[in-house]
Length: 304
Image (cartoon, rainbow, N blue to C red; front, side, top):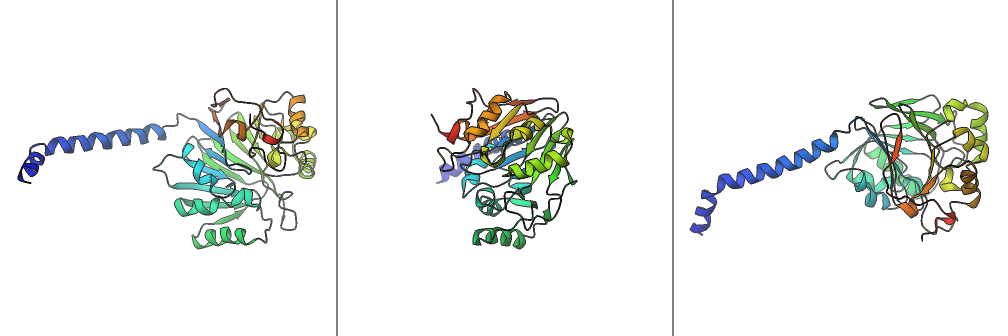
């Protein structure tokens, strides 16, 4: 025992130095991550049949739009959020269907959340009540999305709320979905949850073309034929379309009609089930898809 203590005493300063080196390496890794070099991140998370999108502004503000089903968000969040970060600035529930919100329940047990943005549509199911109770118990401010709101994310990035433009508590969850546009410099992403063709037609009539036009379109309702009309997609005129849907899902998402629309307009379209999480980076001038050799979306999200 005396020999052990003698050894430790003799080499104590070297152990201290080794510990300092390890701490320095960890801190350097943190600093390297925090230096975003003016880049914005937009990611479509691979959470199965549902929606969950991650946004990180050039200044580090983090937003998760929809939480997907079950625990899938918790399994995937480590691909975009480092292990030491346990804080999310804002969550958005575009509509109160379980495949858009249930993943937020386990998330809030591990991460602190500053703000919750919701559409204002209702869901009578018990699980949605669990989410609302978690939000209330943790004292998280809840904001109802309304057209004209601009949410500053820092570094020149912001979210523009396009819909709802009124109380939507009487609408279906899909018709009342939040439609908003992520803007950073000359680049943008149209986010529409499960918004239907009915609402797309409403937006075409009540929204300027310049507001709808976006670099990326997050296809409505997982690429369903009940959304993504030719007229609407033409107005958005995206360079890319992305679809969040689960492999071999029972709904057949994305539908043939949607992919035919994208093909007709020559819009490259990628899904999560064949590519995993899709990660885009923007410098304010152009978006870059970071996935190597991405595979085009296929009907029914069938994996090869």
